[in-house]
Image 1 (cartoon, rainbow, N blue to C red):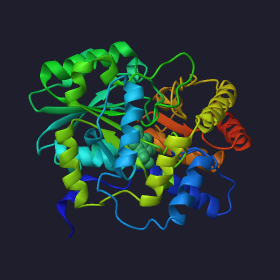
Image 2 (image 1 turned 180 degrees about the horizontal axis):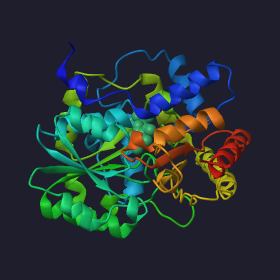
Image 3 (image 1 turned 30 degrees about the vertical axis):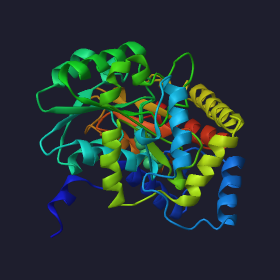
Image 4 (image 1 turned 60 degrees about the vertical axis):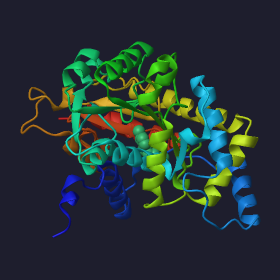
Amino acid sequence: MFAQRTNLFKSSGTAAARAAAKAAADAGMEIVDLTAGEIWSDLAPTIQRGAIEAIGQGLNRYTDTLGTPDLREALARKVAVETGQLWRIDEIAVTSGAKQALFNVAMTLINPGDQVIIPAPYWTTFPAQVRIAGGTPVLVDTRANGYVPKIEDIERAITPLTRAIIINTPNNPTGAVYDAQTLKAIAQLAIKHDFWIIFDECYGSFIHGDRCHHPIVSLVPEVRGRTVIVNAFSKSLALTGWRIGYLAAPQDLISAVKALQSHTTSNPNVVAQYAVLHHLREGDGSFETRLHAQVAAARQLGLSVLGGLQHLSLPQAQGGFYFYLDLSDLLSPDALNDPPVSVDDVAAALLVRAGVAGVPGSAFGDPVGLRLSYGIPPDMLERGLTRLVHVLNTWN
Ligand code: PLP
């Protein structure tokens, strides 16, 4: 009926979980919604002022397809600070969120039949975009290794058709932060086997404990010519609705992205571009510090409540703002399950029995995980997790 490519994707599992939570709330249940991929926060004052100024100036026209030169310049400086390397403006593209940045990359890099390695659990959109571009996702299971891929497993997944690997650190959904040694080894594999690295660091500003975020190009500069850095302000400034992302990549890839974007969305929203530019110029880092402190406090609170779990281990939550529970002990055939339950069953039961909505791992290519976002107000978080712990402790 419709184009065959509509069979390659369905609405994201995250959206489905969020819709189930909303339906339960609309039906009168008191729901604590832990499905959101965003942080509860007010707007940064610099973003507000920048947007108001842009409107006051009557900005209403298209900008350059890849964003205003001023914003690209400011982003080139940001990426330079983060990677310790110089970046030119023609190596930067501004996009409508990281999702469009990734889609641009998929469409300009992947040929039909190409394989793209994706560590699993993965952010639900990665394989969908690869398939839309005609490629084949090749999954590498990270569950036995703290959600960081083993280099031998990546090596085994490489074939002559391997075109790219998608690295997402800190990881959505697992919160894993890749160590420097793993990233260096991945970079060496990319050089040896001649494939690209798509490096999604959207959660790079949320690192907890003693971990560090390492941009892969700063660890192995030789890999820069085959690396695409994808980032956005959606998470780092709690600006999900404003849709400003960007990518940093070799100039010829940016040119291809420009041509593609000129036929799809043209420039990202002009007011949002100016607001982010204003923030990059005038921000003193205090908003980011406050947001980070809020997320860190929510993580501590959440971990202390989850410490009450009797049958499940505590999530590591090294980065981002997600707890990722491994429910395999609840789901295993010897866990009094008759008939066996799936993680979707557990998520559905938690909604009804605890009034708590999470995203089942099935949305992330994992049959035993459950993602809980802790980017919500602390009183709600504590209430929701307390109820969740009670239901999981008395599960059968
Ligand atoms: N990459 C990852 C890993 C994400 O989790 C998300 C959003 O959840 C995105 C990209 C997309 O971000 P944006 O809202 O900027 O499009």
